[in-house]
Length: 213
DNA sequence: TGCCAGGCCCTCTTTAGGGCCTT
Image 1 (cartoon, rainbow, N blue to C red):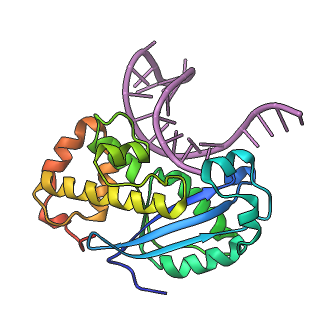
Image 2 (image 1 turned 135 degrees about the vertical axis):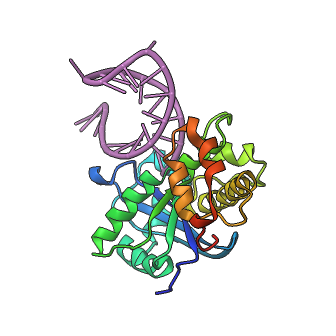
């Protein structure tokens, strides 16, 4: 397992539905490792959830039951992913959703993780309050980030989330005149009332600096 | 057969309701 204190994992799950508590399982995981604002490593795998997925999910993701029948089981893929993830901090778009599935799938193999989560959706809602909405695809367009439009596959969505994250880091960096934006500061930003965002951005101090992301 | 969630956030709020976002 790598020591990943200075890197960040951006991840995305495709799943059979919305709730692991209702029996839904992951069917694909995609993730990229960010170091110093660059994607340096990728992870992608389909996983067989042991049950058929609905027609809605097949249409939504393009992942078919035939594709999943040839995939490795969830336990095997998640075991591999724990090695990729290491103890890095984690980012996802609407992180509460991906965290629920990550926790549920890791529980199946009696694993856990040490990193903490940040949510690109919550940060975007504060930074881009005038965006038409805060869906991942809309924010990619809003920030003029090049995209070939392969949304709803795990690796593609994780890469797009990573590029959005980098763009947000650059915007925060410009607004705060700080070259380095600490992960803890972004977590704090994501929980700050919208009206107080400007005040928080102007209050960042060098004492809050940690390793650059 | 048909249906199912949960966290965040705003407001017509706080003893609540509903929209957004994820698959």
